[in-house]
Image (cartoon, rainbow, N blue to C red):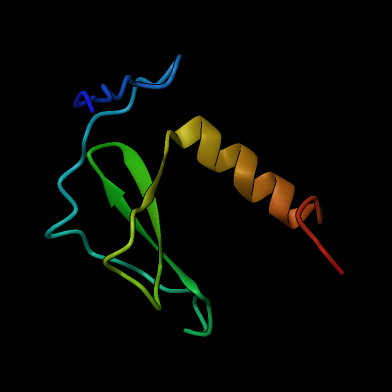
Length: 80
């Protein structure tokens, strides 16, 4: 059987750099009860699962982060 290779292409419109999060200063919610942590790195906001810090992080631009926070405050993501 012939060997195949898959070339990964960046997502259309993906203009975010590969950030080195090794020395990022991760922050939990003010109460420390959250399941996510955020870090401000090189003008971007990184978000990760605090229970699995080795898993991939989501990277937001400041505009994307603002829209996410506004949506959360307005209950846009409320699943109850």
